[in-house]
Image (cartoon, rainbow, N blue to C red; front, side, top):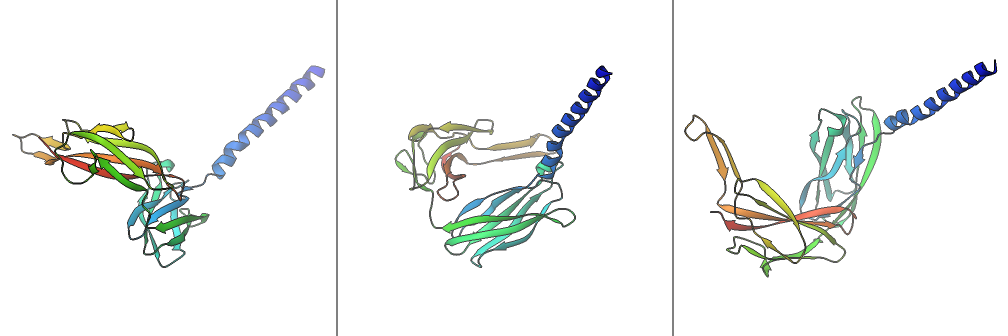
Length: 243
């Protein structure tokens, strides 16, 4: 009899334990929320498409009741992507500020039945501050076409902005993009070849080719923003005549 009681007690204990461990799975699914950009640094007069990124928690969710705190800030949904899975469901909101100021963009996220799931507020810092003060290649400013093949790359940030990474992107002889992370004030080699796309056959019924007279080198500068405290980036280019 004692053995039967022990078995019953063990079964009940195991059932309760499994029930407890099963609860977080249900709670986690119910607590799933969209992830939204928390703050944006916007340059006055510039259009920034995709300034606010939204990753929906469920397929069929969408943005509703989009508003700004001032007539000097314009916001619009500029991109929606409903993929094959819930993790592929995203949206983008573009911004334009006519004047300096600290603003707010607010909106709701509703499901496919138009029921509100959550409300969001994004801080917008609009001013005329540039994060990157200067970018120099071989002692000169980066612009136009150069006959130089290599030189020292120097990046200077404005006060309050922290340089985190520099990536140099070029093309190989097959027209494929390649990238390399470099240190500030190091010597870089400019790209020699342009992009190149080709399909079909020259002697066939169909042939397509697309390239450029310029071999471009893209300098992508990553930094921590002074206002949002998040990572952002800026692109600069140098060109050589392609062979």
